[in-house]
Image (cartoon, rainbow, N blue to C red):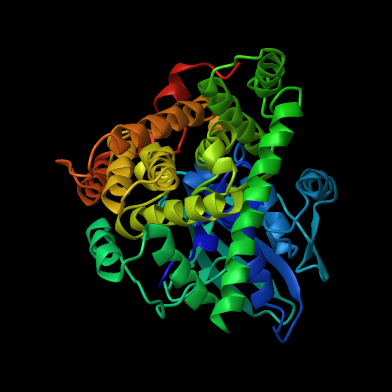
Length: 458
C-alpha cells in the first residue's frame, strides 16, 4: 500500500495518536460494520491489550473507544464534546451504539490485559458485539502508531485516506528516493506531489489544487494549535500537577524585542504538546506524542527566514511533502509507534522529518535532505518511551522542544556539506528498528520503567 501524506498528517485529537485517535477510528469502523447486521446490538464487549491496557486511562483510550463506538471520528469530533460525552457515558453507563441504539455498559465492558500482547502489535483491541438474535460479531484491530489502524487479517486498514499502489514514484528506501530524483529531474517534494496527484485521481490540474489546498489546511490546523497553546493558561489534566508553561514564555518573548529564535522554536513545540496533553485539536506528525516538532520547525522557518515567508504557500507544501516522504521510510522500514520501538520511533522520526524538510525549503539538494534526516534520527537512537502516569506530559513536552532544536541543527549541519556522509538514512532506520526490537517492553509506552517508575506521580 502506498502511504499518502494525508495518512501521515491527519487531523485528530489528543493526547495520543495510537491510544486515542486509532482506538476511536477502530470503534467507529466496528460500529459502521454492524449497520447492516440483521439484528440490533444488545451488548458490546471491549478488550484492550498490551500498551493500550497499560497506559490507556492516561492516554484517553477508554473515552476514545466508547465515543468511536457511538460513531464519532477523530477528524471531526469536537475535543470539548469528548470530555463532556465521556462524563455522560460514565454517569449513565450507556452508549448510543453507532449513534442509533442505546446499549447498556457493565463494569466488565472494557477488560484490560496489560501483560498480554497480541501477535501483530502491542496495541491490540478486540470488539465483540452480541446481537438481539443471539448471534455474535467479533473483530480485532491494531493501533499501529500515528493513528493508523489495521485489522487482524492485515487486508484492511482504517485511515483518513487509503493509499493505492498506482503512483508514479513508489519507493521504500532512501537509496531508491535518491536514485529517482536525478533520474526524473525532480526534487523530493515534487516526487511526493506527483504521487499525491495520482492518489487523488481525476484531472491532474484539479488534483494538484486539491492536494495543495489539503496541505495548506494541515498547516492551518497546526498553526492554530500553536496559537491556542500560546494563550491557554492553567494546569494539564491527569493529576501530575504540571502547569502549562508555553503561555508564560510566549508573553515574555512578545515583551522582549531581541528574543532568540531558539526560544520561539521551543515555545511553539511546547504549545502544541500542551494542547495535545489536554486532548485538543492536533495533527499527527507523524504521531501525537511527537506532534510539536514538525510544526514548530516550520513556524520557526516562516518567522525567522524572510525569504521563506515571502513564498509561504510553496514553502508549506514543499516542507510537508518532504517530511512525509521521510516518514514513509520509517513507516515502511521500521515503525513510528512508541509502543513498538520506543520514543525513537516517535520523536526520533519526527526530528528526522523536520530536519530533512527544513533543509529542503532552505535550498538543499536531495543528498543534503537525506543527510539532514539521517542526522536527525542518528542522535535520537535508543530513546525510550516512559511517560509518567501514562500521560503525554513528562518527558514528552520538553522532549519535543529539544528535538525541534536538534532538527534545526541537523539541517544546518547538512547544508554546510555536499550531501556525502558515512552513515546512510537507510542504515540509521534499520538501526532504529533493531534497537526497538531489542528494547525491553517496560521502556516502550507501558509506564513500567524509566522515569515512569523512578519519579513519583504526586
